[in-house]
Length: 71
Picture 1: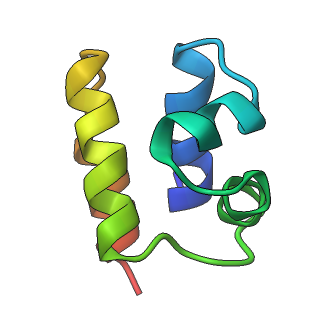
Picture 2 (picture 1 turned 180 degrees about the vertical axis):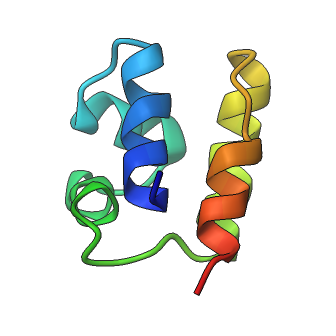
């Protein structure tokens, strides 16, 4: 899967809207929307926040990390 699909999957595992997921990560709704549509990629700081979110909710972060590292 692509990084955008992985982000959407993480969000849906917690039954969150894009807006609620954005609040949890302390980013804007439009940022999450751009990630999920593949228009932009999370930066390193955002990836750390997503990783912390995954750890807190017992979600595997590995697939997103691998997809994010692909060029």
